[in-house]
Length: 592
Image 1 (cartoon, helix red, strand yellow):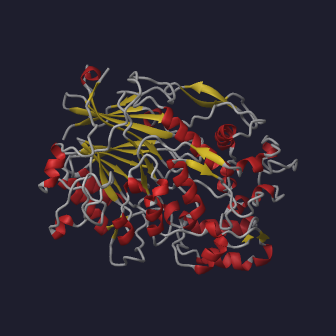
Image 2: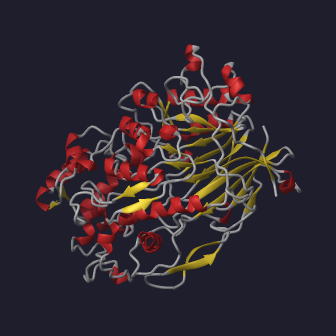
Image 3: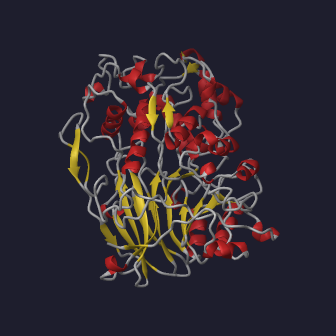
């Protein structure tokens, strides 16, 4: 068993790095704001511009390690994809899932050669869980683009009404873990790397925060008594679970499940994470439908109104989809005109103000609401200073030797791909340099390859935007960077990166929880005591059983069905799990 370095720290105590911070040698910041004492908050909220203004900046405290009731056995596999994964047990039609063989751990030596005997020498530095692309969906929202299914069958997915029970089951899985599976270290925190919501709707934001922090969730808007959406519309291009209608999905073997919709919108309960959790913003959190910049009052009013477009010809749907993929309608002007042109085709639904879009400031303020503190920290990384300045990036201390940096890679100018402003890029470089004696883990929603949208931010038109290559350059010239952890592409991909100065790190992209295989990832950082470090990545599924029971429409039964529906979703990619080297791995790095 590896030796585990203590990362627990009294909130009132002083450790080596706190002393350095007090003398100005180390600074962690929230991108804006003011310095906080360690007893004020577990989130880092020092001034982003301390280096420029000369203001004193204090470091955030070490996250208190969760104390396990009993010492966990390590290494272990139970509850991870090392032990088993959901796999089809039938060969054709609608395929039922069951227990499949696990995925072995693969040692990646792309950046450094692993040395023998390291398992007996290693010391754990940090351990955490990454959740990404939960896409909590208000499936009855008037602005949803389900009608694009007439041109792209995967533009609407049969599992979309079950994102809430699915996410709750993932929380249950994290809570059941016996610490980190390789080292046995306590899991210090969980980080959500964006697209926590889907439609930028206040209803979805409330569901997300409640699921993460604990409480009761009713995944329903509009009429409180019944579902109003495409799945009881009678339209055959959508799965009509409660009806005997021979719709397109039933022709593929999808079941008739009487009572499905009533169960899907019924009140559910989340235990909330039992470890601290942090939040990173994604494009679906920042903009309506993840792609349209704020500002069109017609679309904002349509979101809370009583009309919904549920069907569209394939030719018109193709034109709209082309504007989305081609990035030619960042403000939703074409989409607005389409809705107006089809005013006679709109169906009536119950208006609901909770479906209103939320701003960046409202997103941050919601995280700061004491009702959603859960296991902490207050704000889940964000500070009141973030809300005041309209920024959504920050840094925080993970352990004595490791810091975390959460970036905002969304582009408020519109479109689903991202970029970063010059001010934030300079802050990133400065934060890494000020903390050169600590290893750094970078978190963002977008991957380096999807940061190609350089449209100016309307709120900061003079702040030049930078793409993924510029971020890679900054990370590559700071020798303390170990990994860039992100999502967005809904696929497991682990890529070795080497900067111009020869420094290497890993870019770790993790699959979503809305598309199969519905995964999250544990990441452990260890010092091998031989001139190398290792990052262990271990994928996990939700706690829902692999086998479904069509008669079980309980919260747990729906979570299991959520996974099986996502596997069978027409047009779904079969490559999102990635290759073996993108799943359960040991990623070896040279020190320095």
